[in-house]
Image 1: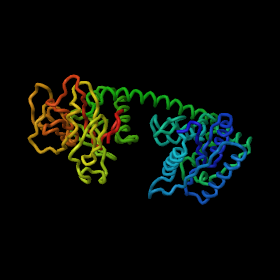
Image 2 (image 1 turned 180 degrees about the vertical axis):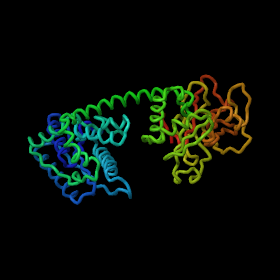
Image 3 (image 1 turned 120 degrees about the vertical axis):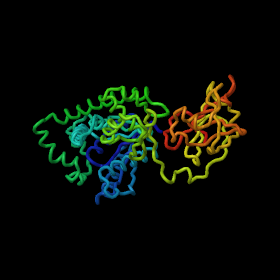
Image 4 (image 1 turned 60 degrees about the horizontal axis):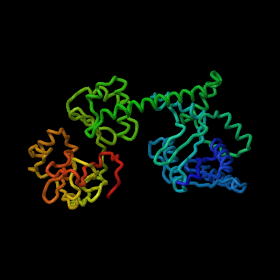
Length: 444
């Protein structure tokens, strides 16, 4: 990314116009070029006029010597039936901003939210019974998908932004949808906020500070959850014995953080409350949830994501051979996952054994030796002894020259272990249900 470029989300409204102007004034002396990113949502009959006004404004600033480049994107999708227009517009806008910034060499996008916006967010989240994460409001800076989003005016009162616009005589767009009280934020602004400010003149500052405190509390909770999870999570899942040893509050905190990491979003409070009760049991159990299934097996809780029908292994021809010549990740879509190969100093298989591998399904009667000096036993018995659940036994058996080398869920057969000093690797099967987090390079 070009570090001499910064982007500003520019709707043409009062706040974004003020931020873009201030950014341009500051960038002149620093030799920084500013991208003005405009998203045409297609929701208002005035959208074309707003686009033209923003483009014309940037052209005037450009003629005055300000280093601005106007970039716009017209959204082609529409909200789905029953979908919140506010939520759709927000998600679509951020996708478009990210796309435009990347395409034009910027890795930093400035957003014009100010102190009043933060205070309103705190109130709205509280009215939705949000937890600490929701009450934290909007972060000042966050990095997502390689893009850094910054709100430099989050501590700036709205009155100061209005004064800046008047001082510099900035023309801006007035979005008529901001008057529509069907939207929660507009109801708050027009019907509640005036009375709140009259009764409590410092409400904007006080509520924004409360969001700051919530952000600090959320950061502490996240650190605590990360520490707890690190001590009790393994390849088999979350250790429920260790989890039960925590206090009730820490159990809930761990569960929320663990579910967020697995599901990719915050888990519903109803799900967390239900699990807090039902995880007291010890027998095997499953909980179908959105986009996957939770499974309790032998004292561990695991999450298996759903696979779209188009991604099912049986829709792709299964690979029958594989050549492994270096460490990396070898994708095998026909088997519904991939083989992760990592160099080790001991306990691995000689790399030379892996140049010509045969991939086979279990047929019954296969023998696996779990350790040097231990007897070879059937895969069924080895899986039971190692407490490998059924869903972790998926994947191909790997053979070299007719000798069983690797079994998903069990690892490397002891009969092919490398001698000290030999170039060797260890292997791990990762199904498409699982997340792949490794520093290894891709080999596929």
